[in-house]
Length: 567
Image 1 (spheres, rainbow, N blue to C red):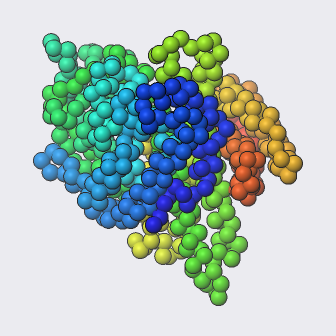
Image 2: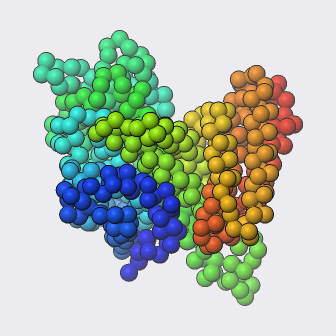
Image 3: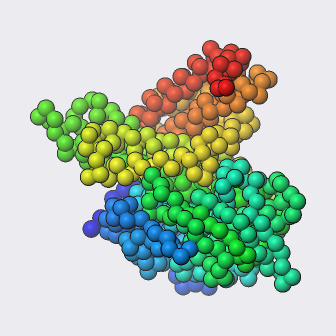
């Protein structure tokens, strides 16, 4: 029997990071929940044991059910008839297994039927599920939308809807429209308030993942005559009330088990979530940050599968009398794949831990006044989470695509055939750098943390950590790399030309990303020697990237930007 948690010791390494002790104590309110619920942990060790057992269940279901079903799900896909979606039979089997195991609403409070897990072990489950079937993660992982209801809905709505999610009902976030993709302030789905306080929704949504879900979060225009984000509000639509039909399912390249729907709203009854006019300005931003962290986890899961498939094939395939893993061209490719996987996973869980701290403080603030020190700490971790989320999503998804590409390359001609899983994962990987904000949009989100020094300050914090003597030479190389990055930032920001700054943004963000990930791998290797090889390989890669971008910036004149403009 396969278990996608226990066969990967790197997961346990990240689950037991030193910051987790603080996170768990805050989440469990110093373990006072044990007074109300007999299954709540009594201490940190008890909590870790609980996470461990649940993740073992996730790993078992993924290894024995979801992964073996992935090929048939990819082949069969969902169907639509009379405005309703029917999942592929194996997808329904996957959902039933997750519901039966109680794996829905993992991060929701116990009072609603959830497991009260921090974000970090929940994201770890998403990582595992994505390795098993990337498309299924889109269905299972949308339980994360319940976080928005928990943060912004009223207590009665929380009780009604979150309880249902924890019992296994599915969710979707209905944001995109035919004329409003990344530009969500152009959303025009009309919301009209009724005398009884409910609302009616009319219009069309497109590219909605799991669009025939039980509970929808819907971005709609509540303020007549407005055309920007200030006229948008967030609504909760309950499928039981009717009024929303699936017009079609998109015929996609990959993640084919996840129905991507075009929806028609015809006088659909809905209720306001939170306050009017805050739909895009506040609620969607929070929703999208959570979704981007989920896609970062999805990307790492795909990278994991790509590496494992490539490694297994390289060990088995023989050419010229020996296994191809013995050829430098192949083992270099594999070692780089593993380094990119480890680097993106380290960034993912660092980001998840930062999200955990500030979100838990936000939750505690609803119960009591935070101390000045707690408010300061919450603000600090919120800023770090805001900085690392676009890096984790942007660079993690790019590495995911690169690893999927290299997986096929290791397989050679066989990788182009449907006989191997790498063909499917290559198609599945492609969307990760597109949806929930393209890599280019992640650069836009990240660049302010370059120019304001968030990344550099974080790097300096990492530099302050003492490392084992045998790692000191690598730490010295990273110090030099950091200096090169800082000088490049200074050179770009010294030029008062916005077009030039925008042109160089990608290079600066990539330099920040590879430098941060290099330090994270250094800290991982400092705790666990199994990461040392990936650290050494990745630092070679990161140094080359930093030097390449630094050299380009140094030799490039601002007026040359015009050369790249296409008529």
